[in-house]
Length: 342
Image 1 (cartoon, helix red, strand yellow):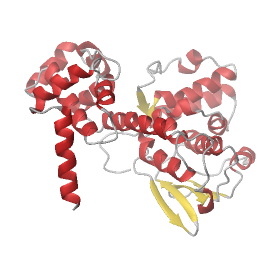
Image 2 (cartoon, one colour; image 1 turned 30 degrees about the vertical axis):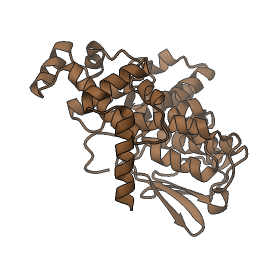
Image 3 (tube, rainbow, N blue to C red; image 1 turned 90 degrees about the vertical axis):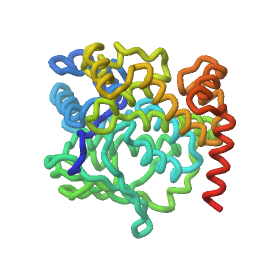
Image 4 (cartoon, rainbow, N blue to C red; image 1 turned 60 degrees about the vertical axis):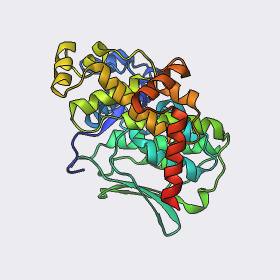
């Protein structure tokens, strides 16, 4: 899409679906990745959309499978979607699961804005291709994966009403017809997936409200930590927020992830009037205030998400930042919210 500050990206965890499929077909991951700059060892890492599609195209050639994206999508599992997948699988209905997929899809693949609308008795998901030459393999992986995951969630074959694809029709549509089992249109200006409105109330096979709530908290924190744009300080903040879940957060590690030396990162932070410790404190405070405004989160969970081993350490830190205890801040925020809504 035009005007974006940085290219779309894909999570490494999502791309492990490709590695798993390649391995099952006799193609070792090291051979698939040979000659590329990707290791995919860090499941929290990301690559550009173009690089992800290039891996799919390379695998399609090595495996002599022009429909590789479809076949990888058939084998998608909740773990490939990370927190998003676990939020969706613990929802009560298909409509709730699809809404969570729309909300958190950037954690898996950043497609830009995904439109969702009711049209002639159907729920239509719509998104624009990022490039003039849309990626076929990656798009088919996304769509086949979405349908496979949906079918897994409800325990039966979800039947799309139609699908639009923003690239020319391939020579053979046999696998498309087998997997999608619905009318297809090619060379469209955007991607569209339509599901009958009647399917939206379908109950999922194993809803768990408590687990859904916990996974939503994790997804929200990951979404807040997702790098946006090219600003170095914003990227450092995002990496710190992500790293808080597995402390300690270290300068050397963050510098490496930013492709900088530790000294260079320290210098750039100093130019902004910050030390690395101060930046961590800022990120923790911002996340703490966001979590405390969520009345469903207990203080132990907030402390854990911020990387504190003990709630008492979080209590002391928050009192130092704000002059209030977490409970006092939460009560004040609740009062302000009630006043603004009255």
